Length: 220
Image (cartoon, rainbow, N blue to C red; front, side):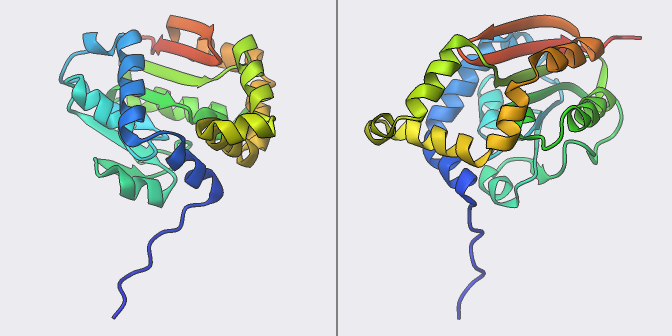
């Protein structure tokens, strides 16, 4: 008798799963979180990661001694892979109580939103709602720096993709998310203004093809 059929990854998820191993992704997240000050967060901070994928950001947080972590992602397959406290949900309408978390994190998810600026506005409204006054919002997203332009050029090269499997996986992800990805990269001024209008910037950097933002929800 056959068991239940496994959930089948779509092409983007398949490329994401081969882009880097879980351990590589965990180490990347851990380095990034240290860089953005996560080691200084209270160890009992309640942390919510949006677009949590297969849960490796949550593992990185746990390795930093932060144990009260929850993830949310739209993909049932990725949530199943997480094996952490994760649930399937939409960041634009979170089933989470008001002022219930100290930190909210997005590492590479906002550029998947299908409609800008509307979906970004809805997401930031939800983040603001679930954060306590003074809570932190940490964002890491692609940003069109000179470095990212070079990455795009290499990703368009058949030779580059053939010689570097990681580049092929990245280029495949970009191909399958091109509509939302390009929409995101075209609107830096709007995105920056929207983040700054809701959060007091603590970190606001653009380098190596990434936006690194940490903002604080106003206390009043």
